Length: 411
Image (cartoon, rainbow, N blue to C red):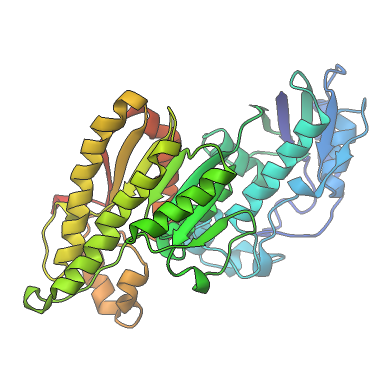
């Protein structure tokens, strides 16, 4: 199905400096002229969709007068919460850039996951109403079009779509995939669950801290499971296998660490960390591998310290080092089944493992200063890297370690 997206014609809101607004303006004289100069001469669209805003409805009727538009709130602009009706010059430009890239979510604003879910619902609506050979015109807003360009077409979203500017997207009917994520109750695993859920994945989260979780949505299945205990993972795998035919992706995020001199490490602590970080991954892969088919992939989250030595985190770093060689060897074993196994190695991240930074800014600064690019990652950034590896690279490589550390491994 071929879908042509165009942005509404200009209104008196353009140029007034609003970050975002819920104000419902008509298109202005300039917008009417834009429509007249861009009218579709031929009746070659099978349907027209637009948002409930006047500017999109008026644009749709002027540029394509042959069909009455179907109005849906699923393609309205992003609700930016407390930033609605605010002017750009009221806020720091770097803050607004972070908001635009979804690295910061203002109070009461729609998240990236919310928006992508809306867009998925819109595409499902179109698929229900139209046939695969139909041509569809959609009149929408710049924010919605940016997300479609970046996350559905993998194109540059930094260039703003001008009034009546647009692009064409080929919508295919896709099958929902299934992903198992360990350690998904918080941190990177939690953010992975959000991103995969927002991209047409059915998500199964395994974590022993499930009781404390703030659930992302009702479509994600949560299982209270200590991955260090083999039988618990086996039981969950049996339950999931009764619900879905196959597992397409495993993301192994579960991990714990302690920070102590070597002389203060007890065998019990060593075993606890190795059981969770290393054997927990082994248990998960072992329990689900028979449910994986050709084209499936496994991603193990490790650390730049799997190969870069430091002090006081011996068990954690040893477990990640063990995972790195396991990744390579399983990559070899599963290659004949066309199941790939890769690892994501990263540097410092603002997770609960580094919660001491919240009360000690100097420690955070010391960590940042060790990184050539002066980057400390947020959990959602690592989750996005994981998603990108799974979606764009996993089919082309196995046994690989993707190092994204701001240059930390270089010094």
